[in-house]
Figure: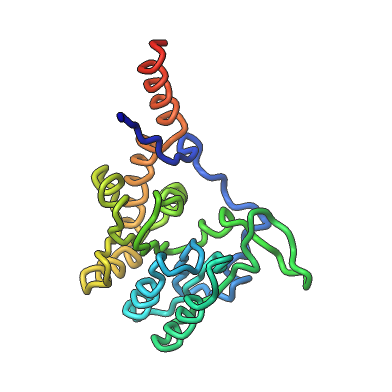
Length: 229
C-alpha cells in the first residue's frame, strides 16, 4: 500500500499580527518580572511531554526565570502533575500552572481576571520548551516556529525523521539535558542577534514546508496522481 504524509500546516504566508492592547499585560498577569526569563511549555501536563527536562534546564540556566505551563492534565489524571509540582520544588524552579488563564478564546474568570489565548502568550515568551518523548507530529513545534520563538526540542521520533532533516535550528536534547544544551540555551538567550537569526531561518523553513501553499501543492500533486487532473 502506497501512502503519502500530509503534515500539519500554519499560515506562514501571513506572519502573526502585532500584540493588541488586550495581550500587552500577559507577563504582568502571570507575575513575571521584566528581568526574569519567560520560559513557555505550551502543552498539557502529561508524562510524554517530558516536563522534567524543562524544569532541569531552567534550574541549570542559573538565571531568574519562570516556567509557564499552558494547559492542564485534562482526563489523564493528576499523578504526573503532582510529580511535576514536587520536582519543581525540589529543583527550586518557579513553575506556574496557568491553564485557568489560557483558553481557546479570550474571556474573564469569575473573579474578573483576563483569560488569554495561547496566541496572546507566545509573543511574550523568551524561550519555548518542547521536550516531549513522543508526539504524533508536534503542533507546538510549528506554533513556536510561527511566532519566531527560540525552541528547545527533545529528539522524539517524528522530529528526528521528518522535522530535523529539513534543517530547523533548535536547542536539541536527546532524552536528557546536557551541558552543551544548557550552554547553547544561555547563548541564545543572551544574544538577540543569534536568536533572531535562528528564528528567521526556522520561519522560512516553515513557509517552505508547512505553509498553506505547501499543503495546496501536496494536495494538487496527490489529486493529479489519483485522478490525472
